[in-house]
Image (cartoon, rainbow, N blue to C red):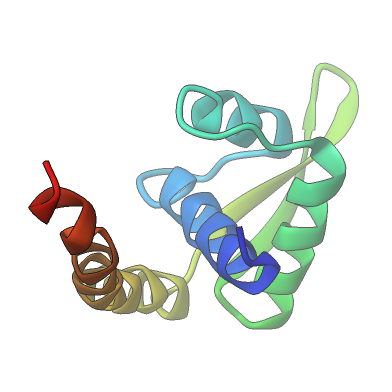
Length: 106
């Protein structure tokens, strides 16, 4: 898969994982696992990029004697999810075009 496309998809997946409630790294990976594999290093790179783009905010709280970063989606992050839904319609249209020939040969 094209690296830029995959990067964009992963960013939206991370935003979707924290859409309903604040979350932290391990929980985000666990929540996404049934749908897509994501390493910690990839996740934290994405989280930093989303924070820089103001699509999420970060707060630190103590949990079991350790500091844990919690991530919250912003209005910009919610808007990005909605934009993705619109973009997905175009992606699916391209997919149907590409696979049309295969369907015609069945």
